[in-house]
Amino acid sequence: MPKVSDAYREARRDEIARAALRVLERQGVRDTSIADIVDESGLSTGAIYSHFSNKAELARYIVGRFLIVRIDGLREAAERGEIRTPREVLLEILRNFDDNGLPAGLVVQFWGEAMVDAGLHAEMSRTAAHLGGSLTAALRPWATSAAAPAEVDQLAADTARTIATLLQGFVANTAVFGPRDIDEYVASVATALRT
Amino acid sequence: MPKVSDAYREARRDEIARAALRVLERQGVRDTSIADIVDESGLSTGAIYSHFSNKAELARYIVGRFLIVRIDGLREAAERGEIRTPREVLLEILRNFDDNGLPAGLVVQFWGEAMVDAGLHAEMSRTAAHLGGSLTAALRPWATSAAAPAEVDQLAADTARTIATLLQGFVANTAVFGPRDIDEYVASVATALRT
DNA sequence: ACCTGAACACCGTTCAAGT
DNA sequence: ACCTGAACACCGTTCAAGT
Image 1 (cartoon, helix red, strand yellow):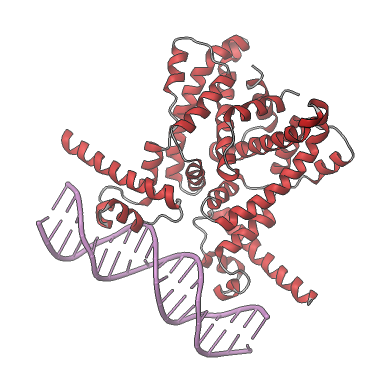
Image 2 (tube, rainbow over the protein chains, first blue to last red):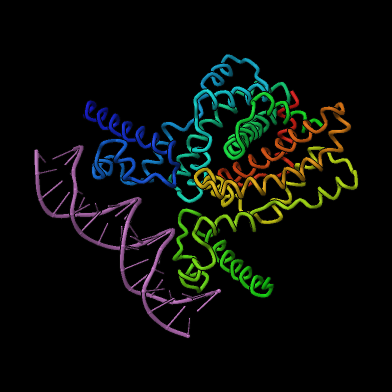
């Protein structure tokens, strides 16, 4: 197991992926060519193809490595048994999205790409499953106090998917129609569905 | 004003756009070439370029003509002064999306496309403004009974954007993670944000 | 006026040749 | 083993020539 060489390869892949991400943020998925990434990275076409078998694998790597929502804090709170309401969980995940500086427009473009690229869709399902697991765990204490024992798991899982959907709605809406205040959004959803 | 000839031109554009839409549903935006549309329509490259100045204009035409959510019923109900709660409005718009057979995956792909195509973004903003206006009108009776006179317009407009966001979330979520029951989704959002 | 289809510049990917 | 860059098949778009 050549540890050093593996680390070198990985660093090189990261270097290429970061250069690609800079171009993607500037020009978008459709208008980013391999030639653009060649220019931005200072490498050659062949160099890139010796680290990624094609453009789709590079996209997959970027999505799995850089376009993920981190919510370690929520999982830990759940393990300590602290109760977080779905509303608190939603607010935390929305703030995390903002703070990590994930570009909403680029995320939406990759959703579109996943509709047409099975490998990218699989990668997104993988990272989403991880997020879904953390959300479900974070919601279980609340679900336990809100449902009969037999229905706790179902309630936690359904609510996790709902929170993911609310996040996706926020991402798609702000990408297309411009920024919106997070607290105002959550308050508005709560008011709207109260009746 | 050559009425007949204009109608003919429009029919021809429609014919091309419908052929393109069939290919788009099969292959997705990225993997649909002009050559594919040529094959599906039975016309030639030049014939298509004599009716649309480029692929972007064809996309714009398809989005404005076929990928819109119709909610005439809501606007009429509002004009009759009937009160619809935001929840009822949301359910109606979600059912409309489903019933019209709008392909969620394709809609998400066009959102991504709009991130990179200013003309398409403008077209989407236009149709969204129309939807937003209908939603705001449909929500005004409810807003009148829920807020002080001075805040009615703001509440109706904010709630309209929220409902649009909830629709977008549903579209993105089902496109990426598969179908979900509409009533269960709305009930889950309501439960999640009650606390 | 509408249509044809060959021609052009550019794209993603490959591969013989270098180090 | 990694890298180079010319070469290949394909894409969107144009345009001289037809009807």
